[in-house]
Length: 140
Image (tube, rainbow, N blue to C red):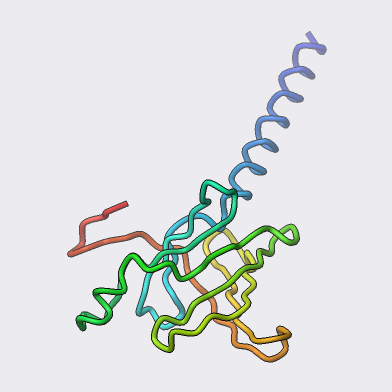
């Protein structure tokens, strides 16, 4: 009887740990609201195993902004440390690219930093996990 209880407890621990590791590794994947709440970026893993982010929504309804929907904003991101990913971020307004790091702060918050040269000379902002809603209807 004690053996069965120990086996059940061990199995439960393995299942909990395995689920936690699996969900943590997906923390960067999803739809993220930018710090200014003006855009939503969907981050996904591409066929090469790198992470990309595409603009899926913008608060600005100008023709230029609407045409930018679908543009790849984040590219070439790879995991560099347990909670950190490195790649390239594009500022579509200025048509410039910057080296970038994304750090998972929590399951619903990312720290996104873009810089030229070294991270000391850059800018950071925090993105919040979101959903894609149009007129109150969830799209994802």
